[in-house]
Amino acid sequence: MIQLLQKLGAKSVNRVAAVGRAGQLLSQSLIAKPAPMTMLPLLVRQLYFIGVLSLVIIIVSGLFIGMVLGLQGYTILVDYGSEQAVGQMVALSLVRELAPVVTALLFAGRAGSAVTAEIGLMKATEQLASYEMIGVDPMRRIIAPRLWAGFISMPLLSMIFAIVGIWGGSLVAVDWLGIFSGSFWANMQASVSFSEDVLNGVIKSLVFGFVVIWIAVFQGNDCVPTSEGISQATTRTVVYSSLAILGLDFLLTAMMFGDF
Amino acid sequence: MRIRALEISVGALILAGLLALVALAINVSGLNLSQKGGGYTVYARFDNIGGLTERAKVSMSGVQIGQVSAIRIDRKRLMAEVEMQIFDDVDYLSIDSSAQILTAGLLGEKYIGITPGFEDDLLANGMTIEDTQSALVLEEIVGKFLFNKVSE
Image 1 (cartoon, rainbow over the protein chains, first blue to last red):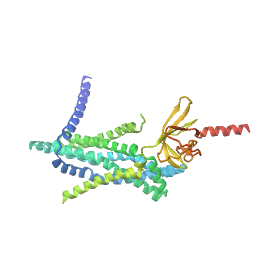
Image 2: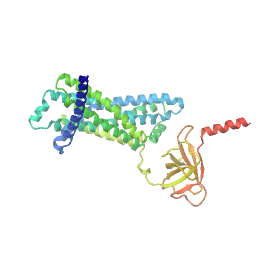
Image 3: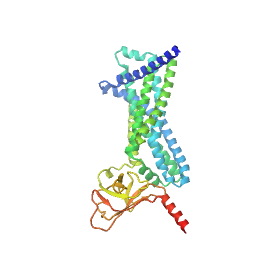
Image 4: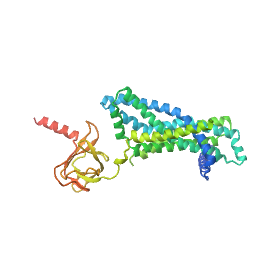
């Protein structure tokens, strides 16, 4: 009984300590005097690996999700004779919900796991330690560019996802199912508001990007430096960030659209 | 060369993201900066607003001339009081104009339709439209219809 209690206590202490270490990592890597000459090339490189290389999966999944939304919305709405509302349905569900969430989930799988594995392997092969040996702060050189790159690229990817998805929806609804394109776009423009829907979607994606890349970087930096530890850390990145995205999404939605 | 291609692709990503935001703003949400701001306030009292909401359209002959900015109960008369913002360039509404609550389509959204009057005096900021017609509530119409059927 006492042992059980001790186990529980140790686990809780570990968890809290991990949260603390994550906060420490964040403050150490982000709070420093800016050095654009050395940081900018590193940031561009990470933007390439984290942002540009995620573009293909984002565009393809955005296109197909938009097309599916168009098709599903049409089959439901045509029963009520209001199939013109497909545009508004596709746009609202993409801009408010699907673009930030699905982009963040894909981002966690595509970029987050890669970042974790990379940093974990650097730790296992003692590259991080050797950076410190030659007097380069690994927080600044390795961690910070990745954090910024994730933070910057996630909203960009989410907006691209939304616009590609809406285009996919219009492809199905207007070009294939023959909804009049004027009413498709006019209904959409009448119901989507820039400050309420588009900006809230951007805020969501900013939050998700921050959380995902933070979890990824922390898990990489905090992993047990063995091959098994790296694989566990990568798994944890995907699992934790997916859970965090979905939980935070409910919270943010309740705050933004919940009327209180 | 390799570095250059990398930087170009990053620039393209950022440009594409910003373009997507612009497209979302203009094409999808129909953001129109010129229509924002301004307008003068006009009030109207209704017996029943039947599902009218804030930010609903105020239109004349089907053209939008303003929007509903607030809805509350007038405590003295115990009627619904609707506050409307009419665009500044609509300066030709006479004081005997009438306001109706209408429905777009069979089940569509509620909006306010203004029918212009004939007086020479014009509506100004803070004035009230006296001649109003409440929303048609489906249950009341069905009730009246049934009542008439029974009394026949």
